[in-house]
Amino acid sequence: DIVMTQSPDSLAVSLGERATINCKSSQSVLYSSNNKNYLAWYQQKPGQPPKLLIYWASTRESGVPDRFSGSGSGTDFTLTISSLQAEDVAVYYCQQYYSTPPFTFGPGTKVDIK
Amino acid sequence: QVQLVESGGGLVKPGGSLRLSCAASGFTFSDYYMSWIRQAPGKGLEWVSYISSSSSYTNYADSVKGRFTISRDNAKNSLYLQMNSLRAEDTAVYYCARSVTTMVRGVIGYWGQGTLVTVSS
Image (cartoon, rainbow over all chains, first blue to last red; front, side, top):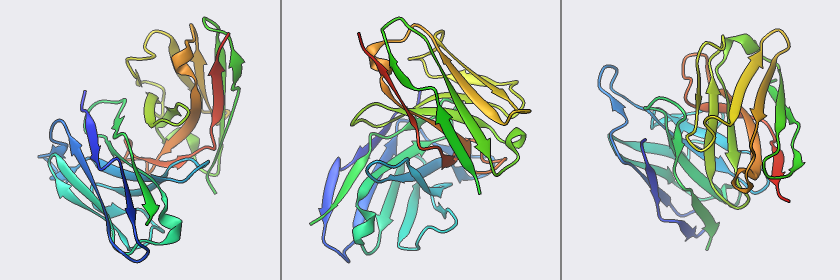
């Protein structure tokens, strides 16, 4: 199974500042035949189900603000919130969908306001 | 709009059984792969099970293999999870989930609100 790790476990960022979350997979999730990274990011606010932010490592889901961006390839990925807003306080999860299901999530990164 | 509504959760004793249901609406249910994903209290997300649009393919997390069975009824726009031999560690909110598109099957685009399963004596 592909194991996903995230860092840091939590971070506190001032409003308007940049937040960066890292995700690492135990093996590459880059599929060579189509050059796509099978990596998604989700946001989960307290008491709510997760919400899809990004897939194919960098494709923003419809309606997601452009302050959210994804980057990386192979085994190392980053979710960046360019200017943190109060409504971005949440736990963020990465997830690989490269291997046969069931797919695996990272342990999550909690983002708070400093 | 897409709606996924879970039901069937509750309190059950260790070793007991429970059947979760998910009523889907707002999209052509038979076109989409569906999943059950769970979240233990205060913990992260675990993908439990996955079923293809025609039910020809299913897969399970090792933690539930042999105990849980996923199924669907496309005529009723419904997804199910039969859970047997329940253990305390199965205690979680169980989410019904739909793939984001018919082609991108491993990404969840829609989630239900979840149903809580508590396994305790």
